[in-house]
Image (cartoon, rainbow, N blue to C red; front, side, top):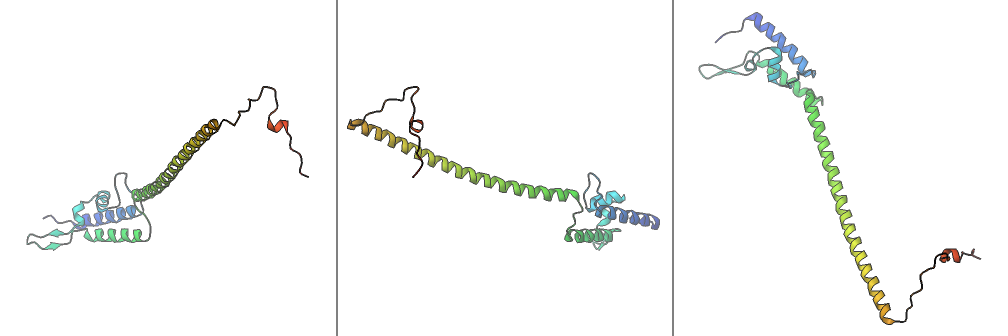
Amino acid sequence: MARIRAETRARDEEAVRAAMDRLLKGNLPPSGSCDLKTLAAEAGVTRTAFYPKKNRDGTTRPGPYQHFAEEFERRLRTLQEAGKVVDPRIAQIERLKAKVAELKERLAQRDEAIAELTTFKELAASRLAAQHDEVVRLREQTAALGNVRRLPAARPGTATWPAAFPRRPHQ
């Protein structure tokens, strides 16, 4: 197993700290997110260096940069608990979830309004049909009695009710 030389380790640790600070400030690469994979890529170290290793006898030992992984996750959790969103994609996802919830609510309200209007339309149509049936019945009844005369239609040029009989002021 190869050991990391002291100057390589110091350079890598400096690169990891700088990358950690950039990521936690929200400066993410276009294809990355705020996670260990992106941290390793930004620092130029292997991702496996952040995880524990197994010895040949089966025991585990910490990875060379495992303490950075723990620090990174701790700082990220602290920022998230404080309400700061480091990863803009997470913020976008949260905004989109809120928008979807809002649109679902609006859709439910519209569905409810449409149902109410449909019920109203059916009620109005049934009332109109009942009124029409009543008018037809009354016409047939009056025609059967024979004592009702139809008034002649108004001739062109003759005055109709409002014009022929103006209203008088109340006394």
